[in-house]
Image 1 (spheres, rainbow, N blue to C red):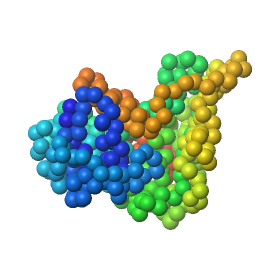
Image 2 (image 1 turned 60 degrees about the vertical axis):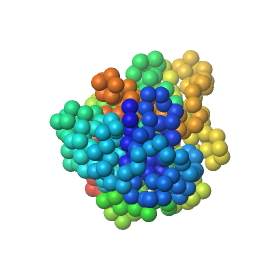
Image 3 (image 1 turned 90 degrees about the vertical axis):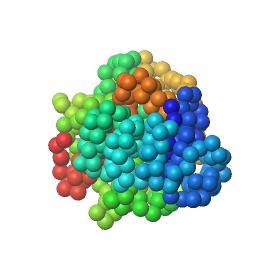
Image 4 (image 1 turned 180 degrees about the vertical axis):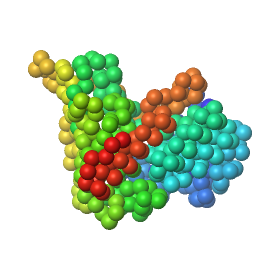
Length: 344
């Protein structure tokens, strides 16, 4: 399977590295307006995990300076969109109409109207629209998903998720609603997607938020399901102290176990590695595969390849579920601004 990556920023680079770890797929083309990046000089790329930007050998890769040229490349089967979120909808629709499958980095779009348009275009074209919500492919979250869906520890009773970062000063447009979308859409959407995947769609949300101008900077949410079960909450956002490393955490309550994890240690190790507290009093530390974050993106790419080759669309990367996650983010923002419960 030949892939053309559109957009060579941090995520474009991460996806490029992930493809190198997966059989049956190769990057055959890249697309960027930046001449230095087309020449393989990626040293200026910055992010909050993974390898530093470096000089890349692109001698066997086709190079395009416009999306139209990439979409016209007959060698490209799959277009991997790592463009700014504001460009996702137009680029995805154009790629689908050009007969290409689309793997689009999250969020699916910046508005549900655009997300609906992307999902409709995929159905019309007969091609797959896959959205890069990588969280289910991280070992700790994959363990949770399997435990819940198999019923290994009984029924899901509740969950709390946490995702907090220091102000991402390297992203100048992070709080711009027309380009990136701010902490709820860019950051919290990971947990909104995972909650939708585990629990289905809630009936309502009730949020409180700390504002930065008109944007929600930090948010606490209750996700309200029928009969108040499961009991699900989430905390997410940005703080202004740069000493806070990126943190993601959860506590999952099941009938026969509680699953705990907190990657927010102030050193190189997690504060709480994945831990299973069983109803019999045992404290277990499951062995997990993969410690390199790129491995999780490689697992995501393998699911993209499986989904397209089999013709059986991925639940994890579904455009419809990604659209639902965006709906949840919009409803939470509305709830925080209006200080009331909002129905879904």
